[in-house]
Length: 399
Image 1 (spheres, rainbow, N blue to C red):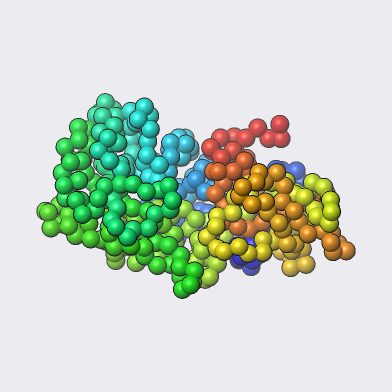
Image 2: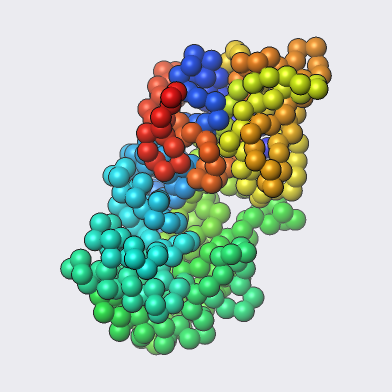
């Protein structure tokens, strides 16, 4: 799926990744980023967000919080990030981005709130309950400022990923706003949910979730209660072509993640303005039983599509040729992905040392993979900018 899009829309990226790996300049088990494309994609998203009057915060966890990725989106005009956890907050801050949004998806632990306020001073801080609001406000007060608080809200019928549940009752949003205004060091600034948009497999397009309607209804209730300038944060499956729909629904903030590197589900269905800008590179280790075993560590394939035939380009020479495609068996999520198994039954079977290039939607921050940022691909002069771990820190590679 995504590999086909990479081959067709960004072949120079695939070929550069093979060339760099074969030259020993990037490691096996690495998510590789085309920083030129990332910058261009960020520029497209920022331009459309500005046109729609939306604040925009970039998501980085899916590409391992890469520092060169952060700098690329900043060059593209996105100067603030959303942090799904404290590790993201530290990484984007260290990479030079402002922290636009903290506390969503994961709340901030009690004894970390004061330090987060003092160091990051996030523009917005999402809270799921009054206890978390008090902790954020106390930290902000100690740091000498008033924290803008977003209330995570929920209503019957809303859609949440398992383990993401929580928040204030949307039906009581006016009272929630008053309560957050009473928090020392804090003020009510708006509302949020996740996800506001999701890809519908049957319709093969992105549709609003019930959560987005909940946000709209809550915003209307706040307006009737006399509140103005309420922020409406509406993340989920964000690409530039969907920002108008978010704005029309009343959103004031968007948070592109996979849209920054062209790997939302809609990017498989349509050629959207954002180019594919991430791939996974690894290497054939050994042969056994008609299979070529390639190094794993990064095989978290985000299950946005039903099971499909995973394929890789396997070669020592830069290519996007269909002749280099091989079917691959990836270990199930219950197993540790020490290796994936490439079909090696054809006459021109893979050999140890061959490069294997995959295209799938990953979540690098939950893997053991390296994260590699490469610039200059659009100019025919690829240059490795960073080799990092999943926390945006320089990796100890090769040893």
